[in-house]
Length: 103
Image (cartoon, rainbow, N blue to C red; front, side, top):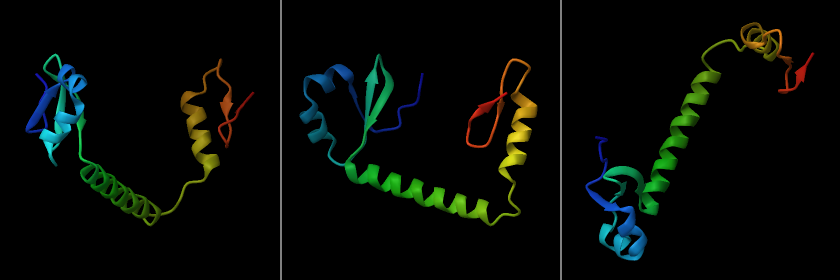
């Protein structure tokens, strides 16, 4: 059985029947939406969702910056050559920079 990651849960049927009541009862807590007793979705208050996105964006910016400053870059031509060597078989056209396929 899958783990439900919320203290509140509601069936899809109940959510369809009375979405306003479900949201009102949830208050500021997340709600697991269950389909046949398995999580199908989670409802989050807007402030929680916004905070999650801000955190993800901050973490992503940090990862990008660490990648930029972590060392010497690799040229696109080298990357495409490696990809072609690995994946371009006799029936596949080679991939060129820009994502275009060539002969």
